[in-house]
Image (tube, rainbow, N blue to C red; front, side, top):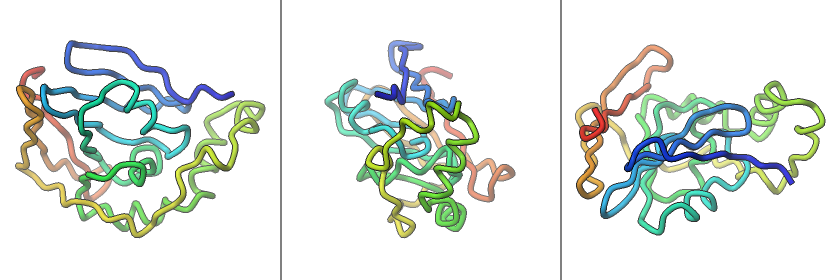
Length: 165
């Protein structure tokens, strides 16, 4: 069986999730809910992992729409992404795009162990909640502020966890 994610607590509020292909995702925990920053390539049951780490409601904040950051989004219900990145997300959502990206980052023997059922089915018409400059998310004693940072993609966003600076 393929181990898709490793995780480690990096502060009292933040858990780092490292994907099989090296992407870094962050789970930020407040008293009332948690925010997952990015969802990786959409393989390996990220939602199951998140649910094993917390029983609080989860919202997802996507930094941008690329294959290595947003393809796990369909596993979650409350997902925010800058609308400017919807075309990027749609171009990268086909399963073949994800498989090509993952294959390029793994040993061929390891890639061969990934089953079709391990992938989140593509949802190119995923409905996102609009993520915009200046939005703030209150997780209960933990606050995340969203800032537009276009360049990598038109809709790239960065997040400040106020209490962590």
